[in-house]
Length: 174
Image 1 (cartoon, rainbow, N blue to C red):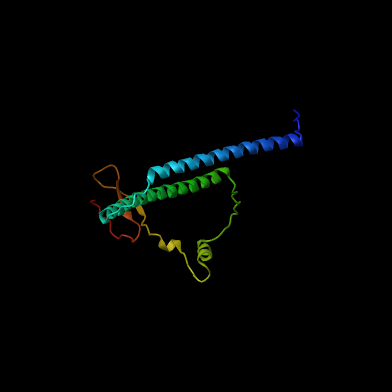
Image 2 (tube, rainbow, N blue to C red):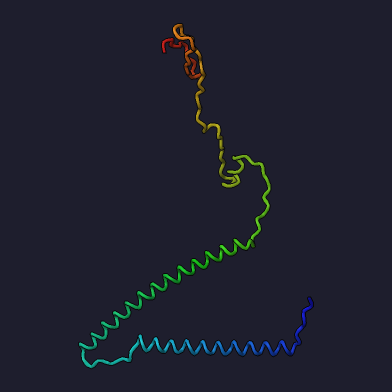
């Protein structure tokens, strides 16, 4: 049906209300992040008590080194997770692009080209390749079926011989 057009003053008013709401949400999120940061710092970094003796100072250094090692392990684990997630995101982006079908396949033309010409085109004009596929084929000897009649048996006895090289003699008692 017909759509009612909104007046420009109404559009401007709605836009300003939406921006005000978004600004309030952003300020609230910033306050929450700051509060979370303060809680984390209070929990992770207690106030520093400066030691008075050498032994206490060494103990403090050991504790700090242990905490540094733990934090380094956590940082490494998080880096691995981030890298894995980034790789997964890239793979998913590629899949989405493939599914959307942004890339059109060009129409291919049929080209009659010999194997020699194809290899020459791929390898360049400097490389002369002569591809004789028939020379690489194995020669197969054909078997010829011969029937030899034996005097004792009523049915013919079948023998298989090779055609090449020709045999001069045929054994009758096979």
